[in-house]
Length: 124
Length: 120
Image (cartoon, rainbow over the protein chains, first blue to last red):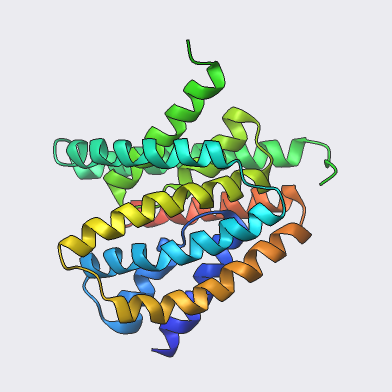
């Protein structure tokens, strides 16, 4: 249980620092720390993400870092996209998708590193 | 005719949802780097906007799971409360580090997620 609290804290820090929900850490906190099944952990993780994202985006809004109109568009379209993703997941071999997506995000990681190391520091 | 920016934004949202539906990874993994690389958002603006979009995505997804009875509300609160403290710390920390550092740490997160997918 103490693991669950500590991993929760770490998940929140990652969420605030990187603008992600933190599910990557919430799910193991709930399966390993508390003993939930994978499905229940994924569901409960989404519930925990709601207040985290709400407070995180409110803090960022104070700093002028939230494009609210874009966020609403992204959120609504992502819901439609997720429905499509579930359909595809049931039609295509899972392993091929996982390897393809892993390759894609490694490419994106490379682009981010390239861009970060190449550019001049900008005033913040 | 919608502008090029609107179409790109639509593509990013759809891709973020598609990949979360496919792999159960959060939309932020997709939205943050694409807002930076395709639309020229600053790192802080990309992460702030991504978090606001996640409020919508996670609320609806959690409600659907709730309808199926998969939610453990007490356990969600147990990890959620320290995480809310964490997100306040994380956003404060983010205002104090360089945008270059944010990009590099994000790239490290992407490598971890890719490794997790490959080892499934």
